[in-house]
Length: 292
Image 1 (cartoon, one colour):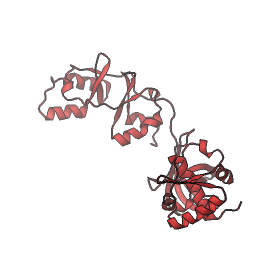
Image 2 (spheres, one colour):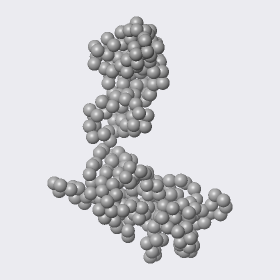
Image 3 (spheres, one colour):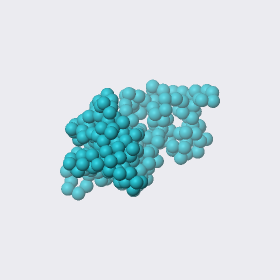
Image 4 (cartoon, one colour):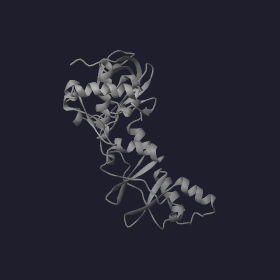
């Protein structure tokens, strides 16, 4: 059947929102995403219902849901089983839109790399010149950034000039952590901590008792302690940070990269069970993947 552009926009946005939220979608939500009048969306929904492309769900929590025929009409029969591939504009996530395909149109040109980005959702949410970021993709953990130089409203596609592509490392963090792990017993003095740091050229170490993690002490902790009147004979337990950020050794590197920014930390203690086995710092990540 021949759908108008506004009908395609509404149907694609409905499918995208329904896929993300798993409940009936109100016309106002679709109108907000598309920046359309809610009355226009409701009128078009009546036409889409008549075409058996959407179902209405009554009640306060009601709205609209796409039918199986809607997926077939838009060649999205497998979309319900697909993973979300997010897209951001100027650093902010764009809701109601999912990336379904990236086609690289130029990859061997010495100066430019172009791609066509096909969306589940409306391209009307984007304008020429917007800087966008896509990903990570579910399999290869690919991140793509670039600038929009064109739009195809019929195919719901963005034409972009790629400025950066990154494939996030997928190995477990135990492959990148610093090991062996240098630790301090809970009754060690600040003097012993400074000696350990100097000997091994490190800036911090976990504090343990019977292989159990109690905290972490860093050069900054020692400096603050001395500034507060502590002596070098003070136990590290009096200046250590007890709230330690940890991660299991079988966690993948790309999963923890964001934690450094979100938590504003410089290191993670890597554990197997409750036993500390290594340490991962921002410097370790930069060495492995300098573009991050």
